[in-house]
Length: 169
Image (cartoon, rainbow, N blue to C red; front, side, top):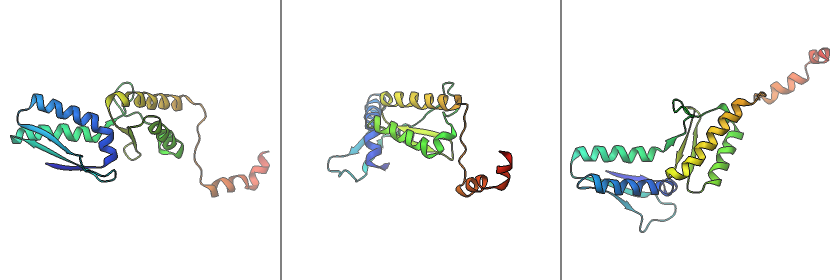
């Protein structure tokens, strides 16, 4: 099987992929993961080939490889549900995640608003700190007593220019 992986994803996952390759070499006979990185340009995808002596080994190899490519979802402390708050669906949440990504080079942070989760790509040691920071932010946001609700600009203007608002004063 052959895959083409974006360079940014390959760079973030390279430690995990090389560890998987070495694990495969010791545990599965006639199996290998080949990375074609020698003459690649910074913007070109990395070609990766999975090779196995049997169909069953190829299935196992493919499963492990694709699991690594999917990254890691950040879960809450109980590991039952993804660590998520609607804060992450707003611009301030995207800014927070972008800041985390900049503070931890070699890691990719993706937010999926539709599925309400945050997915991390990188080595396990690098991801641990980011996971903790996301969980701490969820706890912090949930503990706040003041909640903000984004309003449409027209609604906000009409709310404050309404004549009945003067009567309330």
